[in-house]
Amino acid sequence: MRETGAYIHVPSGNKETEIVVTGNQQQVDLATARINEILEDKRKNTTTIAVVVKKSLHQALLGPAGDNLEDIMDRTGVSVEVPPADSSTEAVTLRGQPTQLVQALTDVCIQIQTAEDNLKSRTPPQETIGTVSPVLAPQDDQQAKEKLPVCENSKIREETKTIIHVPPQNSKSDVIVITGTKADCEAAQQCLMAIEEELALKSFKLTMTVEPRHFPKIIGYKGVVIKKICDEHDVRVRFPDDRHMEQDQITIIGTEKQALAAQNAIQAIVNKQTEQIKVTMTVDPKHFARIIGIKGVVVKSICNEHDVKIRFPGKKDVKDQITIVGGGKQALAAQNAIQAIVSKQVSHIIKDIS
Image (cartoon, rainbow, N blue to C red):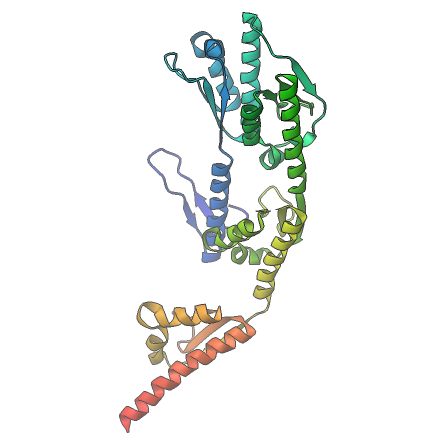
């Protein structure tokens, strides 16, 4: 993954189920968080909707040997499930990505309308609601993910007993067609206008410049920190990927108030990182065990209490050097805590000798 510098092995067969990430700790943490973000985005954007179709029209929707349905699924990548002939259920279920569901739903509606016309059944009066908004007929994948109210569409159809036809993604039209009685069409139009207004409020976007070295801290282990910011402020936060030229740009989307609050939260993390200092103290290695404690309990307690990182010397480091990294006051406080442990240990040794 170019943006993180880590090497990622993605399984190619059914027997492999693990994604292997290789690199230094920072690269691995950043890559893992990015992978989790992508998987979560995929999971969230997989939507299920149900369309009530008269039982008499199910066969027409399927087509000869299921050809019509198979054609819709092949072209859109959406799973379409029609209840068995001996079932009393009328609902046809569609599952897939919102942008794909738009086209699949449009094709299903066209098939239903064609079948009704062929059967010369009564068709409720149709009203074309002029330009509701381009927001509801997104022009690219990203807009579709952000703004297309597929779930709300299904709910509106059920509540108002209408059929709502949204233009396909690649269509230049921004006209939404609502089919039903006049009263039902007007009710559905009001619902769509309310959704449009809500989406407009939540579409405020701001961009902040942050050095990429701060990204791991902002994201946190397994994305915990950034998820908390998104949940608390009800926003979406995007980090740069390979398609972006500016690798130091973070984008925040939500209402203006929420986006600004999230920006402040991220900036606070950056400021805290920027203000960090490194303190090196000389300690006789014979005291390390006492400083670390059983299973690392003591050193973990110091790190958590003072919000610092403590590193003991490795094979190539000076053997009696302990490094503390954190905010100025926190790092010095952690140093004092370690020094207190050492002093106490030394005093015990002196007492034993005397």
